[in-house]
Length: 254
Picture 1 (cartoon, rainbow, N blue to C red):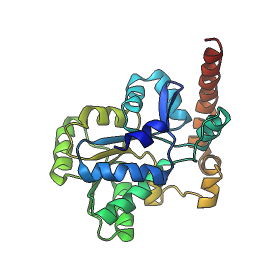
Picture 2 (cartoon, rainbow, N blue to C red; picture 1 turned 45 degrees about the horizontal axis):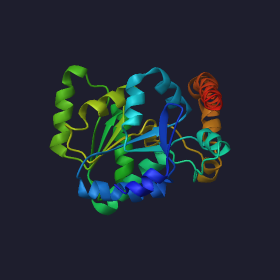
Picture 3 (spheres, rainbow, N blue to C red; picture 1 turned 180 degrees about the vertical axis):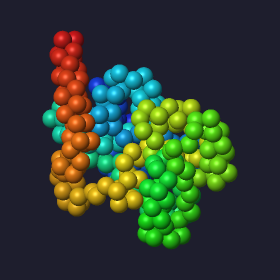
């Protein structure tokens, strides 16, 4: 890994860490790691909800801290970090990183496996991806298998031997899965993709790029699905600000 570039843009705060890299910069760092395959590269996206979960859940916090790269997956986090004086190039949204890595996989002939989501959603997403990248070798497994059959799922993934494994299980399940199996699974990249599969299947409609770049995607999502996203924002954003304020208070009292 390009340690100098990564280390120079590493920030540790709020009990987690971030790499202040754009999607393009992340792909530049990731590609040689996947190509050489010396060791698997683990990537985690962090937003206010993740910060709050990490403050209460050791598995999530450990998964973030042990990740090789952590992308800033939220416009509010970008704004707060900038207010605190950090030079953040912009939001590196996980769905955007996912799309960039799909293109990279197609260009470099990397194999892709997706784990998670409902079977119908997963298959629609895979078909849509194949439509965009006809030469991409891609398979998947829905996330609704019984945990007694997890060894069979691992065997299925290893039989396919993907270069990139995208995991769309809920938290902290996906973090536990990666921590448990990233040395056992024959993949060169692990990335939790959250709702990116729903976006790829057309279940969730992302706003135009200009609105995403302006930081309005979260607001638009809350209007599209107030029972889900609205409730989550009202629950986790105040808790996130409490963590930020507490961190500043502790820093000022040292």
